[in-house]
Amino acid sequence: MPWLDPRGRFSAFKLGVFVLLLVPAALIAWRFASGALGAEPIEAALHQSGDWAIRLLLVSLAVTPARHLLQWPRLLQVRRMVGVAAFGYAAAHLTLYVADEGFDLGKVAAEIVLRFYLTLGFLAFLVLAAMALTSFDSMIRRLGARRWKLLHRLVYGVAAVAVVHFFMQTKLDATEPWIIAGLLAWLLAARVVIRKGALNGWLADWWPLALGLVASAGTAIGEALYYRALVGVAPSRMLAANLSIEAGIRPAGYVLAICLAAALVIAVRRSTFRAGRLARGTA
Image (cartoon, rainbow, N blue to C red; front, top):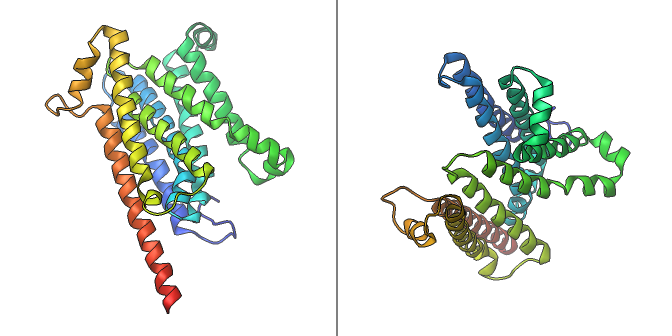
């Protein structure tokens, strides 16, 4: 049961995460039933379920770095749950696409083959399905730890493919895809830093912020080049827009704000943890 810890005991933490994972689905269903999704409710639900699939995929990738940076081992207990939830929203996304096409499976298959962004999305879904189906302890024993790890490391490729799919199916406004891309870059770089070894001193607390600054700058540059290629907007104009809030906050600003918040939480958590260890050592 998703609300039980590894020892089979009730966990309020896991139950809380489980409920939170169901909230987006409940909201989409409620809006659909109440007619709040507009003139094309299936298409709206289709896009919203896809958005949540990639958001939760990003959250699942954030669990391991957060476990190390926050020194909170219990986070690993919900990693599998979040990953399976991401697959669940992806499955709903695909199902709603089939419904939007009138359940014409021949047409759906042809569209997936002929439209590259649909091909990418479907391939990402298949890999997510394989990971979800092998997420149980019994499957880990059947596959063996080495083969299981190799399969589940494909999640990084799935995330990259999902981001490309997100960009290609988005209209002119690619704000959220760029936010997701910037945060994904930050998470992948954070994993590399953590794997290479722990940093000491103040760097251990603040390198996530420095990495966030780099990710934010990369997001701004990437967005400028994207709109230059898409609609011919001069990169200097897009870069200048990041320095003004008159036209709204750009994706790089959101990436920086999220990374800044994460860095502050990490710094406070690590300082509190060190203070607690020091107090216990002098007691």
